Image 1 (cartoon, helix red, strand yellow):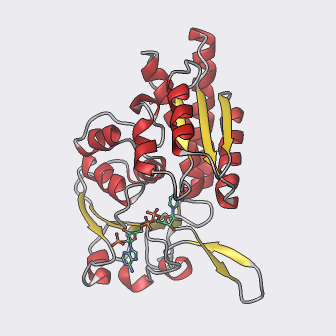
Image 2 (image 1 turned 90 degrees about the horizontal axis):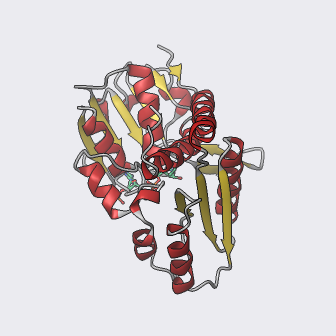
Image 3 (image 1 turned 135 degrees about the horizontal axis):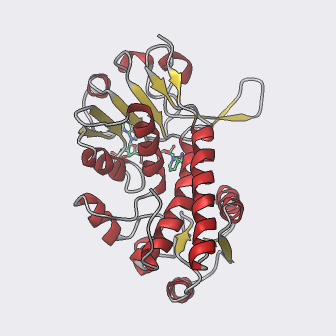
Length: 293
Ligand code: NDP
């Protein structure tokens, strides 16, 4: 068997076009423009790239984009004051603080300061609680993108056996809650899981969110299973230079799986598309307008 490649890049384009159309309708019918504020503290090169591409995508969708680039020495108090200002800014519907923050700033405290209605990353404890209890929440972008690809591929997910490898607050746990909400039978695996290959072999759906290059090998995969690879790992190429690989041994797993997401071009582009979608959703909820489907 050779797996169907789930083209996250193409699907993300579709989502972005839908977002753009909704933004145009909001402008035409309600004179409302969704706005996203992205806050970056310090000069981490990877974070700078993410922030730039988020800003560009926001503008391309017809939304207002503002970026706050703060010095690495910015105090926690100054950052909290900026968030209070953005919470009160009526032109801003989404606030995203790029992680990781410098060590002298308490990340939990900063995330807790964002008003939950504008928490487009879905990291505020209120949104975490709403998601965990199956209620309407702002959902973290990466797992939301994974779910959208799974729904597109399968239709209904009810009754399927899902194994999520990784239990982080930003990917693994929210992914598991989303799959549970879809009535999957969900197992969350992590670094202490015993017999991980055996656990993964049960799965109709495997979501790998670990951060270890090519850890998931073909012999772990039930023939025909769907494999979603969240991992982004930069490795050295034998001929020099580097390249990005996921947590899944793609060439070999693709011979066994029924469907698989590539890296790059799978989960990554969907994450940004979902950020845009979340910003429109937040805007609609704040203005009490119909949300995008
Ligand atoms: P974390 O480091 O926060 O979590 C990694 C998880 O993997 C932990 O739960 C850890 O277990 C588990 N783990 C580590 N080693 C093993 C092992 N040998 N066997 C089983 N489980 C293991 O990472 P994130 O969740 O933040 O990210 C995961 C990956 O996804 C990274 O590569 C990251 O770059 C990528 N990512 C990609 C995004 C995208 O847009 N495509 C967005 C966000 C992340 P334990 O809890 O026991 O330590």
